[in-house]
Length: 503
Ligand code: ZN
Ligand code: CU
Image (cartoon, rainbow, N blue to C red; front, top):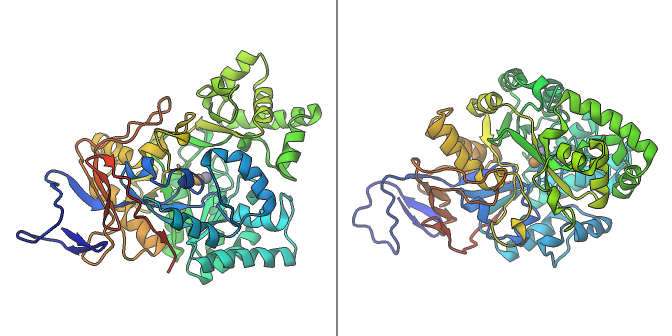
C-alpha cells in the first residue's frame, strides 16, 4: 500500500515504487484506523491533544459529546462550574457554541480526528436550567434552534443522557421534536437510555419510537444489561433492534468490552433531587429529612441492581479523600462507621459532587452476546487520557486505555467471540458508514490514510481496574491523515487530526 498527500494512493504490488519512508509490516495486520464511536474526550483533548491512550490502541477518530453532555452550547453560568471542576484540563479559552469549540480544538491541533455531537443536557440546560417539567412551546422552539445551530456547525447528531438531569427530565415527545431537526440534516440520535437494568426493553422501545417518530437514524450507546435481575435481557433487546431494522429504522449500537460501567457518583442519587441544579442538590444532601427519603430509594435500588460493594470510587477532587479511590462504597462506609447512603452523601458534599465511580454490574455472557451481534460497533465510553501528566490521576475505568486492544486480544484471539475481520469491521467501516464518513473506515485507493498496523498475535489491553494508566500492547504503527502518530509503538508527537463535519 502506498500513501501520499494524506490519502491512500495505491494498494497491491508496489515493488520498485519510490517512497520517502517504508514500513515493514510482514506478519502484522494492516487495518483502517479505528473509529471510537462513543467517547467523552470533549474536555480531556484540551489537556491531552496527543490523545495518548487512544492512538496507542489504534484509534484515529473519536466521536465526542455523548450521553447528553457535550462541550457546547454553554452559558456563562456553566462556566463558573466548569472552571473549578475541570481545572486540571488547563483551559485558557472560553466558548459558548459548538462552532467556537471546534475552532479552538482545530487551532490547538489534535492527534486524532474528532466528530462532535450536541448534548441534549446542554441544550435543555441553556433554555430551562435544571427544571423538572415539560418545556413550553417557546422553550421547545428555542431548544430546536440550538440543535439546528449545532447541526449547521457540522455536528453528527444529538446525544441524550436519560439518567442524567436535566436530560433525564425530557419526555419522549420532546426528544422526537428535537430529533426531527437532526433528521433534516441526516444526523443521528445517540442515546444513553433511560433505564439499562430491569427497564431495558421499555427503554429500547422508547428509543425506537423516537427513531420512528422523528425519522432519524438511531444509535443505542453502550448497550448492556445492568444488574443480575436484568442479565440476559440483551437477547430480547437485540431482537427488538432486528425487528425495527426490518421495518426500516436505522438503529445500531455500540459497546465497550468490560463487565463494569463508569460514571459520576451523583448518578446514584434519585433524579428528583437534582432539580434546580448543583447548589440545590448539595443542600438536599445535607438535609437530614431529605437524606432519609433519598436513602430509602437508594437502598431499594441497590437491592434490585447490585450492592454498595460493587460500586468503587474511581476519582475524587480533593487531596484529603484520595484514600477513597479504588475502594468500594461499602468499604468506605465501614471505615467511616456510617450507613453506605451517608457515606455517599458525605463524600459528594466534601467533594462538591466531583466523584467518579466504577460499577461492577454486567455479565460476561451478555458482553459476548452483544459483541457478536452484527449491528454492534465498538465505543470505549472513555476519554483520551495519558499515563503521565494531569490526566494520569485516580483509577479511571480501564476502557480509556484498553477497549480496542481488548476486543482484538481477549475476545478475538483468546475467547474467539469474533473473527478478526468482523472485529475490525465493528471498529472501522461499520461506524464510518453509520456516520456518513465516506472517505474513512476502509482501505482503498482515494480514501483518507487513517491506518492502524498491529500484531494479531500480541495485541492486548494492559490497563486494569487497579492499574488503569497503562497503554495497550501490540499496536505498532498508526497513521492519521497520512501522518505517522505512532511509530514502533511510541507516540511521535504529531497532531495531524482534523475536526470532521457531517456532510
Ligand atoms: Zn452513557
Ligand atoms: Cu458515555
